[in-house]
Image (cartoon, rainbow, N blue to C red; front, side, top):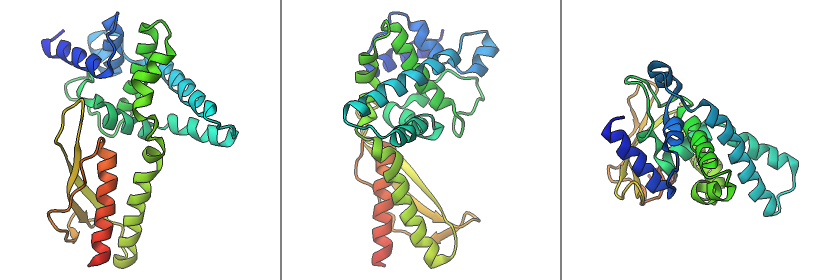
Length: 240
């Protein structure tokens, strides 16, 4: 294995605050099926299935202990935990997993379910390596995003929808909103800023000019920064 891959494994374990007894499990969890087939390596498929079950068990158990008893609400949580977009957001914003994935040279990660699969596989790998220690997976992985759950599945979407609706009413068009991200912190303690927003029409031309200095506050995740930026854009447009 290449030196930088060894360094990545070490860095990820430090970030997760868990040292694998069997690093091959972590390596498998990070290996895409495409690379596995190409190099005849074990990939994340089996660990992903295990991790899916582990995540649901821990997460829903925590909710029930907090008093959640409505089967309908539990079903909604289960569906959200099965949603690739939700898990991909968690994978990127809370764990920065895209930098650790072992993939084929030209394999595309963005827009696929790979980030979600790798997140599940890592949970499965930790569970196996720790002799089925659910509490460890809970403390080292689940608790990092648990308190932000409502924000993850609702707040960003709501603020973005409010902004889109505001623009649609005034311009009779569904815009495209693009932003850039800057991390002023470290991988272990990120301070994300969403900046340089652009509101574009369907031809990728500027629809509404914005001030260049509109940016979010420093946030611990990209989605939180994005949510803050959407709100600032909306407030700016309302004052124009």
